[in-house]
Length: 80
Image (cartoon, rainbow, N blue to C red; front, side, top):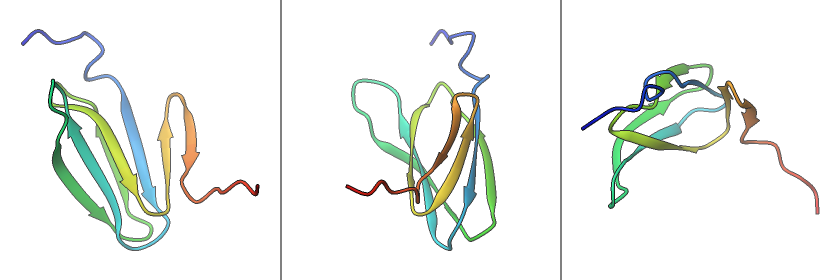
């Protein structure tokens, strides 16, 4: 499988704000599936990158995600 030259350059950081935050990797291809899960406790940090197998991640729980696109805080809620 030919790799995109940028496949291994996008790092992201997930910092857990509570115990039990799940970081779930999703596969590439015609059938997107869960392929890897990490569980973080409050204060733990995971540094990861997208690969030829991982096309997306899902973060479940309160965490801060740092990417070169910006910072996402999953506990930020907008009032309607």
